[in-house]
Each structure stands twice: as C-alpha cells, then as structure tokens.
Image (cartoon, rainbow, N blue to C red):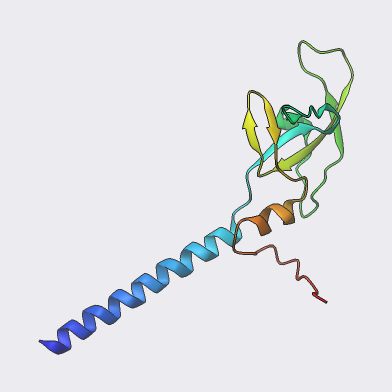
Length: 121
C-alpha cells in the first residue's frame, strides 16, 4: 500500500513539473500583444492613436517597421508613421504605456525569453 502511494506522489510531481515547463516554453514562443499606432499622434493624456493593422508592415525580428500608410476617415489627408506598439494599455482607440521594441516587450513577460543575450558588465 505504501508503494502505491509513492508511485502516485511521484507521478503527480512529474506531471506537475511538466505543466510548469510547458507553461514556461509556451510563454517564450508567444508574441506579445501589439497594436499598430501612428508614432506622430502621441497625446500626453491618451497615448498613441491606434490605426489599422494594414498600415504596419509585418516585421520579422526588427522592432520597428517604419512604414507609412494613409490616415483614416475624419482626419486631414496625409500619411501616418505607423509602427507596432507592444504590451500597451488600450483605451478608446489610443494605446499607452507600451514599447516599440518587441524584444523589450518579451522581456517584460517575466520569463526573459527574448534570446537577446544581455552581456552584463
């Protein structure tokens, strides 16, 4: 009977450990939340104005796309300096308290999985 309890406990520990490992690995592989914003639209009360995703180029490892797109309805005609803005608080069409650096946004996630390899000093 004691032997059965030991097996149950050890399998529970193994399964629990695998769950923690799976969570950590999936956090490393997932992209941070991002919004396409107009870099030239910053308002100190609201943040950056969120624009359509089509205005932002899909960038690979680069944190900045630097693309331009057209301004939507209700604004003067022209272009926007569109870029991805990561891990921001979004409210009423504005994003604030985020970062334009994807690797910095991943590092904020708690696991430090960006793979940037800080040198330390």
